[in-house]
Image 1 (cartoon, chains in turn cyan, purple):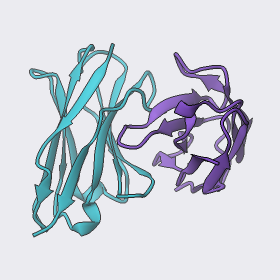
Image 2 (cartoon, chains in turn brown, green):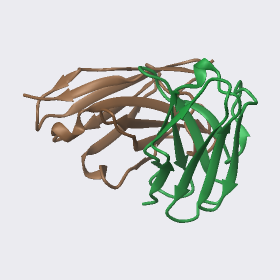
Image 3 (cartoon, rainbow over the protein chains, first blue to last red):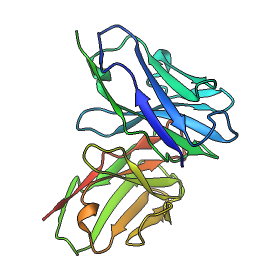
Image 4 (cartoon, rainbow over the protein chains, first blue to last red):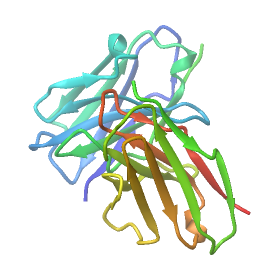
Length: 120
Length: 107
């Protein structure tokens, strides 16, 4: 059974870089056909897809965040990471990682999420 | 980007009754639509994909229908564990986008 777990600092200062990791178990992250995404949810609000990385390492980002986002794979530790630069209070959100299998369509399963607050 | 609009924002239902949730896309997404359930403090859980296909382990009281721009999620005979927020998501266009959610609460 595939499981994902996010980790990283819960507090980031404005203008700094937010860095999160998503540890994956139950499947090899570099196995064929897997897309690994980051999705965030602002407090009390809806969901925003940030971007994905394919098992091969290719990426695709939401145009609204593209200039600030990097998603990468670490196959040695079976995890993938999110880096979001130049953060502001508007980046305060719950951050989830999730898998898409076969095509980057729907998301299943999701990690439990990690709350990141941007504040000085 | 495709805007997904869900209605109503909140739906008050008595246990055992049915609930009908709507999702509208700003342009056609064919049948490329998923539904998720999110309970407080939990991650979203996939319910439906392809507009009408239940995900593994999802009870048959959850059903989805629609194509193009109009979609419906129906929950027949609500159980206590069904009171949650429900989101739709399109995967026809980039970027993938979600609706703002419908909260199903106990009446």
